[in-house]
Amino acid sequence: MPQDKAPRRPRAETPKGFRDYFGAEVTERAEMLAQIAAVYHRYGFDPLETAAVETVEALGKFLPDVDRPNEGVFAWQDEDGDWLALRYDLTAPLARVAAQFRNDLPFPYRRYAMGPVWRNEKPGPGRFRQFYQCDADTVGAPTVAADAEICAMLSDALEQVGIPRGDYLIRVNNRKVLNGVMEVAGILDPADPDRFAHERGIVLRAIDKIDRLGETGVRALLGAGRLDESGDFTKGAGLAAEQAEVVMGFMAARRETGAATAARLRELVGPSQTGSDGVAELETIAELLDRQGYGADRILLDPGVVRGLGYYTGPVFEAELTFEILDEKGRKRSFGSVAGGGRYDDLVKRFTGQSVPATGISIGVDRLLAALRAKGRIGGEAAPGPVVVTVMDRDRMADYMAIVAELRAAGIRAEAYLGNPKNFGNQLKYADRRAAPIAIIQGADEAARGVVQIKDLVLGAKIAAAASHEEWKSQPAQTEVARADLVAAVRRILDRAP
Image (cartoon, rainbow, N blue to C red; front, side, top):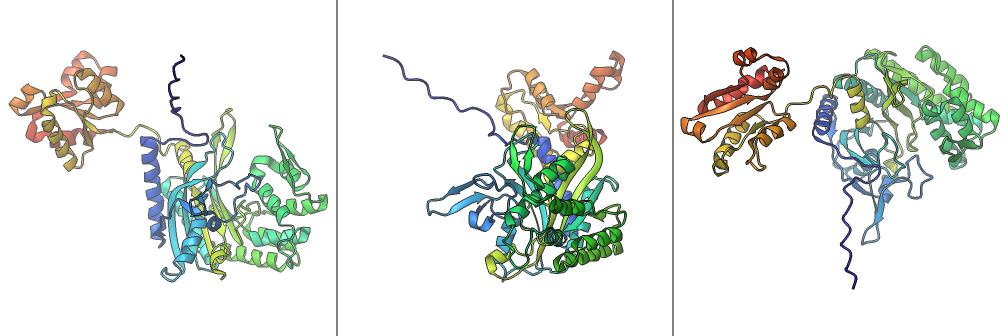
């Protein structure tokens, strides 16, 4: 009689499009976010944490990847029949909060939020389905002074975390200008805003991909469509050649100065009132930033910025890092975008029926961390681990834990070895893997004499690698100190460490 098969063991692997983060990565992210939060706090913004799960109705349908079956979100139906989804950004939850607590919050409401978001999109190299965002938004301020302030704050945040001036540009445009251009191109009817909405969505996503696809790729998406290298075909907006030329002219409107760019945009929008209003807003933003000392070396007008999300209604911005890195094939290329945002005056209106102006920025945390590593600002020498207290006698575990507690009380990171203490060599190997700067040793003899051995693992490694036997004698890596002097001795070693 055949035996039943053993139950299949689960595979120990992350789901496709997801990843795990370990010690140094988590620490580096936390430190960078703390620096950004300090800038946001200085500007008067308050922190906000929202739930990871929202109703699908509250999230709305604003993701750019609308051709996917579930429109890019991870969604499910609960026992009450309501459809829920993991948030795909931090802006849609803010709109819900602003509507839900509108009688309790001070308006304009300034908030920043940091946390993971989820998108059910096709994963690829460096493209994950879960990633961190860091947002700052002002809700309830109709003036474009709020947009200018967001751009200035983003500039300060980039410099705060270690992106020097000259290595980044914040580019600013206005959706109203693009709408004016699309009026001229014949794909936006002010009397019937829903007409040509599908085509406009394709145009927006096409322009947003100019850096990746180039002019030829964008022209293809404005027309019949584009066949990519994998053989996948993306249907285009179906614009006639003359219509596509108007859109391409808009993308090439950037000039040497903001005033010259604005003048060229006025020509392109022609009689469109919406387009004219957008140009005026850009001119105001440029003036406000200039008066605060943010020149075109940091923040400039650029019609090439449109942002792919469909909820933007006015100014839009994007932070691009301009320094070069080597890609996976060893080719030089600019690092690219690490943040983006804009004005979304109609998002809260979905809940309240009343227009509530809002504007904000979102930083791609993983992208910015990668940029800091590329600049050598983080990820150099490994951060030191904890002091490791070895265990010579398992019956004296309380004594070793007392040593650990004393070190921790003095503000020193420390831990006792909790593995099998039988092999002392394995304990030192563990300390090396933990990047421990010091190992504390106390056997029965040391305990009877009221002393401990302090092993300077950093110095020991240097001596073992490069020093002669005489240098071992003149600069010992292991010393004996009185038990009462333990904390002071450890502190001296840590203070002299590089």
